[in-house]
Length: 327
Ligand code: TRP
Image (cartoon, rainbow, N blue to C red; front, side, top):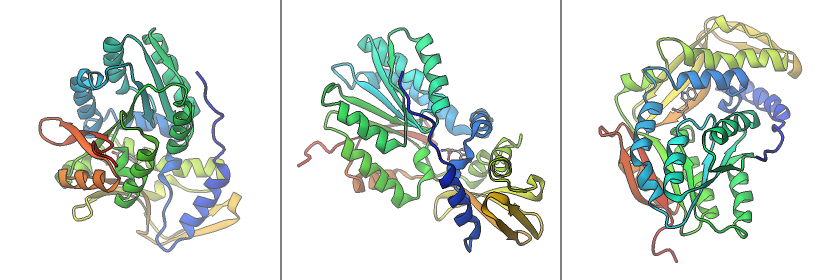
C-alpha cells in the first residue's frame, strides 16, 4: 500500500472562500465539504432511505459484477476514481477475483485517510488482493498509473461510481471524460454510475433527507470555516434547500441566510455581508437522460458499449470504451 501525503489544500481553501463569498452570487466549493466529519456525514447520507442512488447502484453492481469480470480474457487491473469507503466496489472486486484468481486494485482518492481505512479493510477481507492506493486528483493519479503500464500492460477496468459525474457541469463532464479517455487504451473500460432524470419530488427528497443528514453535511462547511479559518458563522442562522431545476436537469444545493448578517472571517481579514434570504451555492447534481448519456460519451470520444439499469431506469451503470474503429 503506497499513498502520498494528505494534500495541503489550505492555501486554496482560503482563496476559494474569499473568491466565493465576495462573488456577486455567493458560492462555496463542494470539495471542502469532505473533512473528517464531512466524510462521515456523507457516508450517512448514503444510508438515508431517501437517498436511493447508493442502494440502486449496489444492486446493479452485484447483479452485473460477473459480466464485468467476463469482459476480460486476462486479469485486469481495477482502478477506482474517488473510492471513498469502496463499499460498493467490493462487489466488483469479489467477482474479478472469483474469475481471475487475484487482483490488483488501484483506488485514487484525494483523501489519504479514506484510502488507508478502505484499503486495510479490503486487504483483510480478500487475501488474493493487492492494493496500490494513490492519494491524488483523478487525472494526475490515472496518468501516473498509465506511465507504469509500460511495465504492466494488464487491461484496466476504471470505475467512477456514485453519480459523481453529476457533480460536474455538463460541459466540464465532457472535458473530464475526454481527459480520462486520453489515458485509456483500446482494451480498457470505463464504468460510470449515472443518476437518471426523474420526478422533482424524488430528487428533492434524496438531497434533503428527513433526518437532516444532508443539511448537517452542508452546515459542516460553516463549522469547518470557523475552525480552520477563524470564521464566526452561526450555523443556525442559515437554512438548507435542495431544488430541482427540471430544464437544466440538476438539483441545486444552497444555504440561505435566515436574516441580514455580517460574518467575520479572521484568516482572510474579511467581513462578509449576507442579505436576508441570500443564497450561497454549494453543489449541483446533474441528472441525465439516455440521449444525454449517449451524446456526452460521443462528445468525449467514447462509445457506450453497454448499460445496465435498476429495472425502472432510475440509475444506470454505463460501460464506456474507445470506439471500435478508432483511427
Ligand atoms: N455524487 C453524489 C450525488 O450528487 C453526491 C451527493 C449526494 C452529495 N448528496 C449530496 C453531494 C449532498 C453534496 C451534497 O448524488
